Length: 204
Image 1: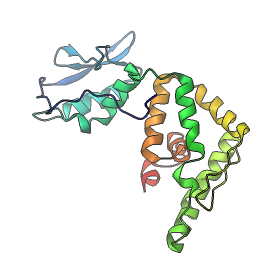
Image 2: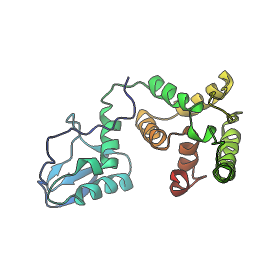
Image 3: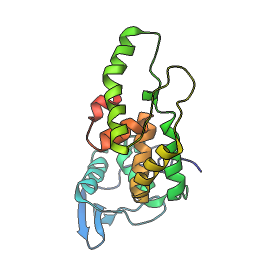
Image 4: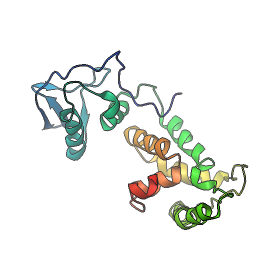
């Protein structure tokens, strides 16, 4: 299955903005985004409904920020929501959890650079506490590798992390995949989502 691809229909040129204002409508099923008097739908034609007001407002803000044309490449949150709602690649929860687990041995923070002393010291100071937090949080024993050989990840560690992710909905797992793909690290993504680390720290 394909992972990490945000679902937004492509076009030869950006479509023109066809609405004047955006708003959020709350109903029994959640929160919807309204463009003028039209309720927003996903690329598959599914009604756009999310579970919380701030997320709906954020998507409405992305649409409202568009000028003469709708620049879809800049609408990351909308694309992520469309992907979570439509699940265009028909991913199962098992598919998604296994994909996330693959990053336990490939996360960038598990491969400190050895050539530059200053950078190595910075990585030790910034990354080691996050790895230690992850191990404590998930009761794992992940260890950095000091060469190009991938670190060994035990089956017990995989099972503990898998159990955590299996508790989430498909929609939430899409969000995790987007975060992990962006940061190239399951450790940093979890640290940001659980507010152990700021987004600014994670991307620097």
